[in-house]
View (cartoon, rainbow, N blue to C red):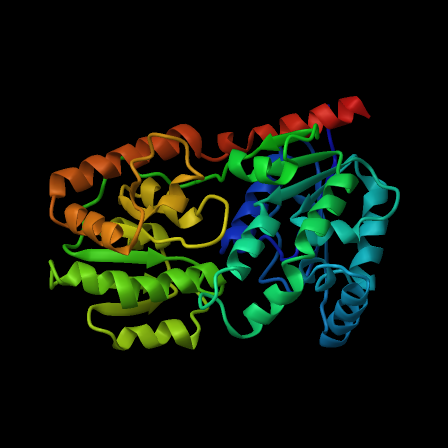
Length: 386
C-alpha cells in the first residue's frame, strides 16, 4: 500500500544540523519508504530540498506576521510554542496541502495549531515531555535567566494544556523515550509508539584519542546546553584539574552566546564553536561530558559520542532516557561526575572498553533507519483503524 504523507515542521529539515532538523530529516526519509512525502514548514531554505520530497512549501516568516500570531495566541491562552509559529499563512498552506495526502505527521506540538478542523489522520510527534521539562526548568532558579526565564514564566503553566490539545487532536502520538511517553500519557489509552533517536554514522571501534581531552558538544542555542557548558567549565573542570592538571575541556557547537564564548578565558577551556565533522571531533576526545541538570529526552550528543567510540560521563538524569547496557558512567553530583571523568582519563583500557560498549549499544538500539521503524507501523495501525 502506498501512503502519501504530509510532514509539518517548524524549520526546513535540511541541512540536518541540530536536534530538530536531524529528527525531521530522518522522519522524512522513513515516510518516503511508504510513498510520496509533502512538506510544509516555515522560515528560509538553505538550498534545494532532498529529492525524496514530492512537494515542498516553505512559508516565509516576517516579524509582523510572527508578532500578530504571538499576540493572538497569548491572548487566547496558547503556549509560546504554539503562538510563535501559528501564522495565517502557514495555516492556509497546511489546509491546502492536507487535501492531497493520506496522513499528516506533525512534528512537535508547535505545529498542531496549523491543522485545519477536518484533515486526514494525524500523527503528532511530541518527542519529549516538554511540559514536565518546563516545570522543572522554571523551578530551578539561577540556571536560566533573561528572556528565556521570562518565557518560562509565561509557558510553564500553558504547556500542559498545549499537550492536552495535541493529544485530543491526534490519531496517534510518538515519543522519543518510554519515560517521556509515561510522563505525558499518564496511563491513558492513546495509540502511541516510542520512536528512538536514530544515528547514521557508527564507528567500528574506538579511535585513538587525544590525552586528557574532555568534550562537550551540542547546539549552544538551547538553555540546557548552555547550562551544561557553563557548569562544566566553572564547577566540574576545576575539580578534575585538581587531580589531572593537564585536563582540558573543549566546547563545540553552533550559536554559542557570550556566556559560553567567555568560558574560553578560563584555565583549560577552549571554545571551539562549529565544526565541519562532529563525528571526527567526538572520536578524537578521550571522554565526553553531559552533566544534564534539566530537560528531557535522549541527548543526541550522548548517542553521537557513543557511536564514535568515545565514552560518556553524565548526570543520573541522562541515564533515565537510555536503556541498560549503554556504558554511560554517571555521577549524582558534581564531585562524583568529576571523579568519574578522572577515572576514565586515567585508564586507557577502561576508556576503550566503555567506547566499544557504547558502539555496540548504539548499533543495537539506535541505528538509523531501523530505530524509527515504529513510526510507519503506527501510521499503518491508525489508517487501518480509520
